[in-house]
Image (tube, rainbow, N blue to C red; front, side):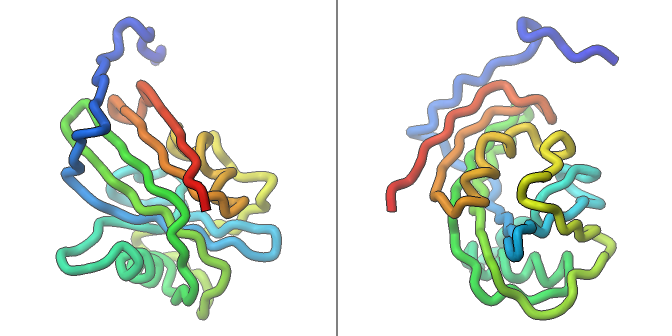
Length: 171
């Protein structure tokens, strides 16, 4: 199947200054010994893609608590040092507005284990399989690896990225 031509794709022109998410979520990436722990997602948004463990923030839960819980559920390990490193804003043409808190960690207990949600994948930092990830990841994953704080704004039509903007956060 051929990809749609740029002129046939919808445009959103989201006003990010007034934008409000309809869903809040987290991603958490563990980096140690020259590798990053990724997952192949088995279900939900992005099923089949490679990403970091994460998911929807439950009512009354902080983003940090959610990130730790999701890693425990998806990989059966406990992260001890999650640091929020980025914030991603996504607007989809179907109306979904997703705010994603991105965390980076270096220590955990347990052994990453496959579950019905995810398959763990240790990958060398210089061999991240970006072609199997969401299209936006190529704009921020290197910042995450280098522990540089960032904020990204993305518009999507399904899995096709329509626009993007990245900003670095001082400090």
